[in-house]
Amino acid sequence: MYGYEEFSKDVFRLTGIDLSLYKERQMKRRIEALIARHKLSGFQDFVGAIKTDKDLYEDFLSYLTINVSEFYRNPVQWKTLENTMLPRLLQKTNGRPLKVWSAACSTGDEPYSLVMLLAKSMPIERVTVDATDIDKQILEKAQQGIYNGKSLKGLPDEYKKKYFEQIGRDSFKISDDVKKRVKFRQHNLLADKYQTGYDLILCRNVMIYFTEEAKEEIYRNFYKSLTPGGVLFVGSTEQMIHSDEIGFKSEASFFYIKP
Image (tube, rainbow, N blue to C red; front, side, top):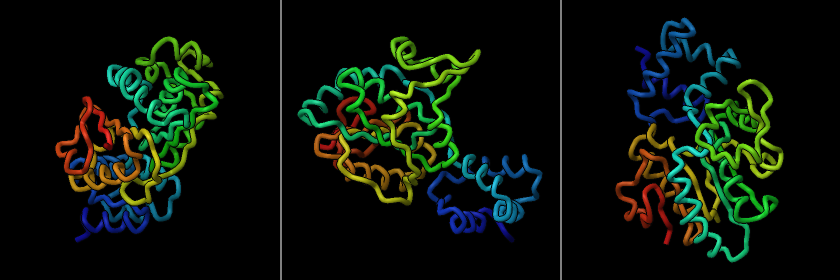
């Protein structure tokens, strides 16, 4: 009988995404809901459909990658980044531009927030942020830089006034000055090679969907990607239990330093 295990193998062959690295019950429930929405009869029927229907294939990839994002999410943590971590990083680089990575960047809210924050400490022309996500469609949306008011609810007013233009009743467009500072590219945290030399990596609100083994592998890769003294900034539900075993030093809640 063709079940979830066979389906996972076929998905890996088709997409390169290893579903076994995600929490099974959570992921299975999401996929079953998608199958029901498209009025298909089960996993085998769905695999056949995504092989022949390009739009359904793209929708499936978007559905697999959970895209919930907003600007300046968890403002208290962003203040810690601004007031504690960034001054230390800027001192460490001694005038060299920071190399920064927003991993699993979703709709771009996070890397754009980073640009605005960094531009308080240096000319915006010197700011560059790498932003990656597995979802090609969501990266295209991020590059458009158009958001609704709900996405901006936690953003300080100084940023809204300086960097956003209202283009509809509830639509806001981010300035080209900010957009130009972000380099978007596709990247699979579970399969692709990691670049190195980063001073700051943000990976927030995505690790909760992975197994413990997958999380540890990703954290070890982040450790290798950071320069000595570099900082990893994680989400509110994603504190590392054994960060010291990887080599990180826990400096403040949700911030880990590579000594």
